[in-house]
Each structure stands twice: as C-alpha cells, then as structure tokens.
Image 1 (tube, one colour):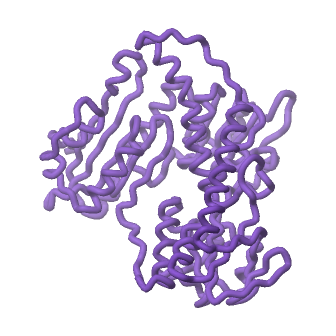
Image 2 (cartoon, rainbow, N blue to C red):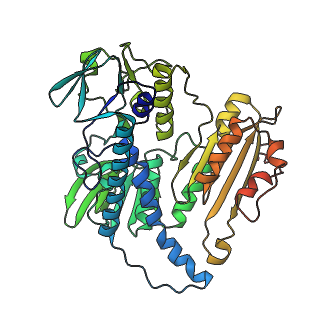
Image 3 (tube, rainbow, N blue to C red):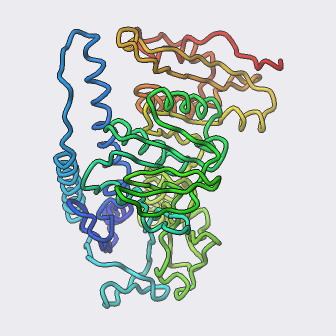
Length: 448
C-alpha cells in the first residue's frame, strides 16, 4: 500500500492486486488492504492486548478506592468490535489509494513473466512489478497438527477458550500467551529451547519469564509437542518427553515463512533462497531486473515499519528521482507482552562480541503504581555503553509503556547520543522513564 501510494504520488501509473477483503470474517485469505499488520497482525493484536489488560485494571482499582464488581466477559462483542475496526481501516486504505490514483484489482496475482501477472485469469502487463505478499504462519508437520491453530485463526475464535497451549518462543507466542491469560484462559506456553525470545537481550528474556510465571502462565522451556489428538472435551498434546497436556485450543506460533508458494516465482525466473524468501539486492531488485520485492517476503527484518520504509525507498528511487537505501541500523521495536518490551540497538552479548568490554547500567524496580496495588510486577531498564566513546549502543526496557518510550530512545541512538547526554538530561518526575537519565552506577558482572 505504501509503495503504491508513493509511486502514484510521483506520477506513476499504479495498480495494486489484493485477494482478501479484510474485516468481519477470515474470508479464506486472512488478509486485506494493509496486509498482515492491519488484518491479522499488529493492529488486531494490539486491540487484544488492550482488552486483555482490563482484568488487571479492575483488580488494581480497589487499591485506589474503587469498588468494582467481578467483570463479566462478552467475547463475541469484542470480536465483533475488533472486526468492525479492521473493516473501517480497510475502507480508509481503499479511499486513500483511490485518491492517490491507484487502481485496486481484486484477486490474487501470480507472476507469469518479467512484465506480466495473472489476476483471476486475466493477464496484466507492467514495466515494473513489485512483490509484497508478506509471510504466512507455519505449523510443524506432526500427527494431528491440523487440529492446532495459528495466529491467523486466533483473531476469529468464536469463544474464549478455557485452556490454551501456546507453542513457540518468539514475540507472537509471548504476546498471545499474555492475551489469553488476561482474558481468563489457563495458559501453558511451551518452547523447545532453553530460553525464549532469541535475539533479545538476555536480561530482558529472563526478566519476562519471571513476570509470566508471577501472573500464572505455566512456562515450560525445553518442551515441544510430538502429536495432538482429539479427546472428550478438547485436545490432548503428547510432548516429546511422553508427558501429556489437555487444552481447548493449541496455538502454534513457531515462525512465519515467505508467502511465495504458487506465486509463479520459478516460472518468471525469480530466484529464492532455501526458505522461499525472494533474493534481492540492496535496491530490492530480484534476479529479474523488472521485478522487485520488499517486506517479509525478502526475510530481512520482519517488522511492518521496516517494510513501509523499504517500499517508500523503492518508490522514491524508481519514480521520485530521489534514490536512497533503507537503513537497517538501530531499528527500535516493541513486543506487546505483559509487561511489554521495548528495545533498540545492540544487546549486551552483541556489544561484547563486537567491542569486547562494554559498560552496563541497569536497574529493576516496582513501578510507582504498584506500590499501592501490591502487584509484584517489576520494570527492567538497561543501557549498554561503549567504554571509550561513551556512545550508547543499546537501550532495553521491560515495563509499562516501554513501546512508547523506546521510540524516542531510537531517535537518541540515531543521533549518536552518549551516556553523558543521557546523564545531563533532566528527568521527568515521577515516571519510570526518568530512570534512563538517572542511572549512574556501572554494573559489573560477578566474575569481574
């Protein structure tokens, strides 16, 4: 959508092919205008995060003088409201594209050759073709695997499940484990490795495990499902160690793959890697000079804002007379776990691997709100600093509003901020964020 709109704004004649309608039903395509993010990704996920947190708010209100009766959940009403919002957003995108002069062609496009796609049996030619089909959730091939769901189906569950098993250790898995837990489900989360959230800072990873166990999520590391069977009243999962668990819903969040199957890449001569991701150069050009690709389908950084930046850069380069490249350094991101994670820059392990010795500043505390509620939720904040240049290499946080806070931390890192810049900044009091500018004592590992 972004690339189409920007290209049209530069005067290009643009058509966009989309097969799914988005909105009130899964529609067989789990998509729509805006792609995964708007329809079965970050937007409805964030709405579910908001909704699942109200049980905490009702509980915490008592400490602040409010007597509120036990909440009653109407899951169907929430899903209907969520679907209406997604349909509204699809309408906004459709009008925005129309106003920009983009022609929307309803149907799935497949590549035919270097300048041709086929949409609903009709061949359409173009000077340049951009592939932005995104990714698709994968499920392991195990006996009974078809009985499980993925994040796609989780957005359209007719009822809130009483018992849920979430399989996976990435951001989608930890987010949905907290969502179901907040809505009142009994949640077990399984991860096949020793520690989830690979690629995140180790302190962040271990801190979140503690927080999840504190709120009653049964987190089981080094655990994986070998088979799934239907039983009276639900599903039975047999784990690789022979133990069993029963649930109403089993959700796999074990990764996503580029959605290139039956796309026509092979027929058009577009090269892919072993995972099905389309190979591109730094200008997003494929092995076929007239065909380009951006977003999750090229498997670089699977984040919506990164895909938007790639599409915008490509449109400016090809049609706007403003050639530029996408900068993948210091990309801030958030995981909407509960509590949420915000992170930008290098992890401690990455920084030590790159620079050797680094300076670490970190703190963990109970946020002011919970001094009354009695909730044991802890906030974690961490800075990683170059020992010679004093440049801040990484900023990491687990705690309320970390997604909002990390956005501006990303600006600071892009600007080359040093620890001295942080130290000389006046804190906003009383906030958790002020800890980032008041940490003065360097942390040293026990071995030092």
